[in-house]
Image (cartoon, one colour):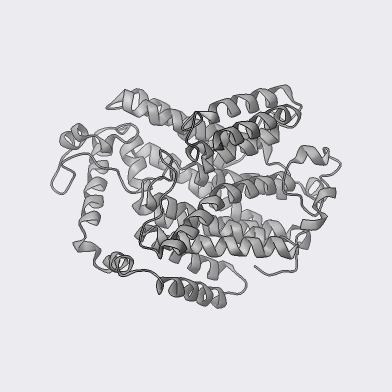
Length: 449
């Protein structure tokens, strides 16, 4: 039954994509982040729906009057350069066949990110992308939080099978990254029912994060709370509220959760941490000997661990467990430099947006969004230090949104009036204050973050 519902939804959406390609972009995001094909159990289970939606979207975009070049931004340039470099490193990978599979997935993610930079060129479209991210990951926040409540937290929360967030640690970090975006949508929504609904999702998101039993996600959550306090106008109050929420949730978790989290304090004695440091050493060994690195996830392979062994390094294959060492081992120091350039350019985009929106009430929404992106990025960069999620599509989308946000802020005429730029039905976003359909969701610009 689920398969039929999903198929009917996609068949109904397909004609709309040719009328408004932005609908295809939002559908592509939904399939990539939520992976609904992993939530069915019939003929669509695991089916490559992304490819077909992506192909239809790109074809519709090519035939439309939409712009064909992404707005210039250093983050976008760095992403393209990084993608090109991964093609070279894969060609010379230690195991080309193994690396090529992961290259294919990464290039699809990069293609999605580039299409988003083409599409999210108005406020309403950007809101649509944010709402789709919230719906896609929010589904697992609600599902996971409800599971924890019903089971008393005795079992870990996992993501959809064979996805980038299948592992409990990966899902936990993705949900931490989601929290600031949910709060942004809550703050900028006028209707009480929308704000209350988002508040409920945020509460379940907190529960789901705790229920993943992920120490990395807990550290990332702490980083998000601290950065939120530093970037928020309410400051210390946000820090206290966040600490109270987490502290309250912990009281309801079983002893098995407490014992696992307590190991953070004795990480030097933890076998899991020792395995991580060994993987990091092997990744560095690969980069030191090979300018191009070993190719995607080379450190996972037993033969690679044996070849690049040194005291304290891996004796058999294991995940890198760090976005930074993952990139070093996969693509060498040049790959890491391009990756860091992309990160730095994205952070710079948000800083520039804050500067451009200061003292401009009509762009207060953009100021809020820039702060939310900063919190999400900080949480991911902290939590990602111990997780292999360097190529996670949800994170790369946020990086590209920073550039799109800067472009929108620099176009005051288009921000002030998007209604005349294109029909409201073509904007296909959660409407904002400037669109006729958005009166019910008019941002409350005077509301504090």
